[in-house]
Image (tube, rainbow, N blue to C red):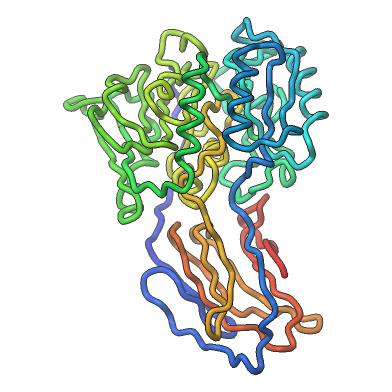
Length: 457
């Protein structure tokens, strides 16, 4: 792996919760602020909201099948039954599975067919074959990124250079095709039906399991492959009390470059060409693991390095690796701080992983896409003289507001700003009797720095 050390974004998450009220306050976090209740006799008790989802559903997942390939057909059938995928979302294409790569020209025809056949509401896709995994043109893209973004040389490189960013990176979109014209894709990545079934079963078992750990973030003595360590440093303390994350530093080479004999593994991120002792560890359903190296996604061989499929064989539910020399740009690999935040706030595995890679063009995403350990069961209801909002999806350090419409004027009932991702119970005073509508404001799906109406009555 050639070395390139670009500057990294920095910043720590402060563990505080602020509630700013317009006509009253809200509640959440550690202590509960004072809330000025409304008088039910002068309040509108009929207005309500359905809070927006933070995750994809089975009805929004397309399953792409290599028609006539027995393994692909069997995997698709099992996945459809396990996840309840609508029949209209199963798309069959003519694709040769005898080669590890496909030409950009042949791929373009297949992608056009897939895009034409997929129902408009489908937001993401699962590829049920094991090969091809690369699209070869003027440079190499992974087939999952090419399926999501279209094959485009701006997303890959034959030199040690940057590549185009994904608009989906760390976004708040739960409808990426609708919002961004991107359908994130994932390859199931099993070479045997028994392994595919076990992987799918792990994904289903993960749903709403609400695990609390463990995660291991390793800085190894492989300096070139450990450039992500700066992102790891603050995570154990930032997530204390919610997840058990462990940062291990072996940069001096006096300890071990891998963990062994660990149970309850939920996250494992490291930087090595080959990772030892995988089979000695036990992964939880929904676990995510990857290693920063050049060719983990160059399947099936890894081009002499450990292929990403080894993580799935060891029990992880998803992994990621690059299909061509990426150099060690951290942006071309998963950013643990983003991935853990998105996953914990209720995103599915495919969403959290895709949102964690800023430059994904050369990277292959593999696993069971709909695994969702941290299910958000959001609710909006009237409790006593207040609105009560229960959710875990609030983006840290971002503004949210509950507002009501009276006449032609929107008025704020309460503003919320949470500094940590966690299950929140927020309170706001009831809207007055003259109110005709409620709306929930927050970060825009396609630009989290701006405010949008996320839901309205």
